[in-house]
Every structure is written in C-alpha cells, then in structure tokens.
Image 1 (cartoon, helix red, strand yellow):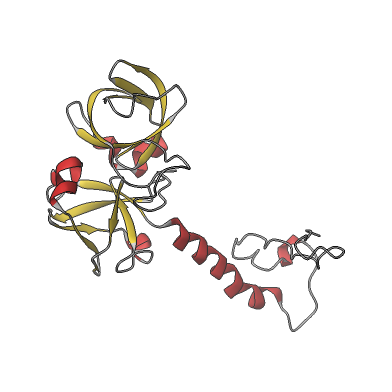
Image 2: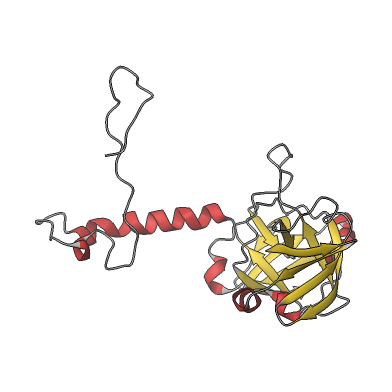
Length: 235
C-alpha cells in the first residue's frame, strides 16, 4: 500500500526482456529481496539489489497495462516505498495497481490528461487520482479526461515536470469508487434476477446476480449471541 507521495526520482539503468534495473539511493536504503517498490505508480517486487540499484521482473501483463513498456535506459521514474502504519497518510490510499494508461494533452502547471472511457466514470472534481504514482487532486473533469494543477515542487521532484504532450502516464483511480460500483451493481440487479414475485428456482443458476456474473452477497449477520450485544456470528 502506498500514499502517492514520491520519495525519490530513480533512473532506469538497464532493461533486458522482463528484467528492469533502476538506480536509486533512498528506496534501497532499507530494501530487501521480496520488498515492494512503486515505479511510476506500478507496484514491483525487488528480486535483486546492490549498492544504489535494484532490479525487478516485469511480466507481460504489467507491460501491457502500464507505460513501463516504454521505459529505456536513462529514463527517470517516480519511486515510493510502501507506507508504514505509523506514517502520516499525506496523499491517499494507493495500491500500485495501475488501472490504465492516459496521455498528456497539456504539460504542467495545468496538466491535462486523457483518461480511458471505462475509467472516466470514477473521476470526480476534487477527488483523488494517481498519475505515474503521484497522488493528485482532480481540478476539472473533461469529456475525454481530467486536469490537475501541479505546484512547482511537484514538477521538480517527480517526472510530471518532464512530461510533454503525447507522453503516456499510468493512472490509478480511487479503489473505493470501484468497490462501491461493484456492490451497487449487484444490488441493482438482484431483485430482477431473483424473481422475488415468484418462487426461487433451484440451483446456482438462479442465484441473484448469477446471470450477470455478479458475486454472491455475504451472508447476513445473525442476532447477537447471549447478552453480549457486541458479539455477532455468521450463519
């Protein structure tokens, strides 16, 4: 889990097939094999490291869904270590799971990004968005994307100050919006699919939401056990 507050600008020093090598000092200071580090907002696993550098394996799935496929030696990247439970949450909850790739329309300070149509519904004015791993506040929503205001400090210490029209950027929307949408989709369809006006058909095919590929809802909580009103059980 990350917060979208970039700790360091790293430099890609090597790329061979699925292996990516990045030069960095801060994020490697306490890193170990198996640790996670976000690279331009993409959570990667440290597989080997040395003095001032570390390497990660990037699978085809990650390359196909992020801008990491465009990286070449010499490119700068935003780096962040996972948040500790004792840290201040300076940005917002970031998973490091990139939802899609957008493209720069206008550079900083008024950064404008195109957003894939299937992600645009999760973007709201003054809501949070992660662009190349940077936690930002949406200034405006457009028909094809969004705008964010980039302060000079952010432009200086992240790659956002280097982005030019046409450049690809990684996008991660607020995970809360996706969970809410999923739940609402099930509840919006369950009555129609369950046939509440008639008998409940047998079999899993008749489960509410099955025809729409929706998951089963959690079982309801039973009444409190005994006199302890805080103790509940699942059926």
